[in-house]
Image (tube, rainbow, N blue to C red; front, side):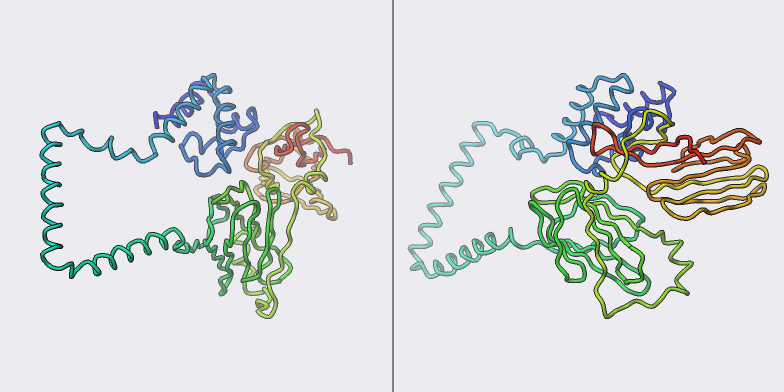
Length: 381
């Protein structure tokens, strides 16, 4: 691999930058930078994205972008199987002559045998040959179906026609089958057919309890494979706590499926402002998760998305986690008493004894429709 990953990692360490620093300045999601440094290229939705990220990251680290891309392409060539003539030694002329004589002798012996036996075995030979041809014709169409058990919180990988995704939920196992890949993705959920094109995603409520269980998004649609993101919309630890009070699975009805055009969703997001602090940027818009630790007593109020106002009186040592989809408004009467991390990135909302109000919100990039920015800015109460 020409040590491509270590080259990036060592260059970043020499520059004194962390992965979080690189994420903020390159606008590339943290998971993709880590994937480059670990040479885990299967995670990328397509080679076009990968080449672009390699160039941007190389430029950020003062590496030669063209050289880094060439190292990646050299690796791709190295992974291709070598031609058989490169794996075998070239015979000398003497050996070639001996081999030719040996082959001629075998052919003559075979012809004499056929004529002397009255061609009794000729039909059997023909039959075997026909069977071999039939097997060759059938082989391309024979593909063993692969069943992928989805138990992680999130998976990004390629799928092919015939693959089956198995999703366990309580005592049931639900199935998504990949029926066809081309200009669109044809798939079935519990044998009910659906179709998706690029720029769309599916949210599925398998057990019809009013909560979406699984997100399926197309990252890249090719001729023979499709790169998908599969993500649990409710974490397994939350499900385990609610399993005793949750209503039984409605076996009579099919799963509830919602197809969302992400272009339509993007149009509802405001363009990123010039003010505020950019917490992170990336090509995937995730939930907003705010983790709060309290050093001394502080009053906190907040609004999750378009929901109602919620309030908490936090004492020293208290912790609180708030999750939102698009935006979170938060205010504190003793802002400096709170240690806050947004999607694992530390932020400050104010000083001790100070009343502060902030809005944390996803925005779309003004020029790149595939890029999102999570920004924290002042909020007027």
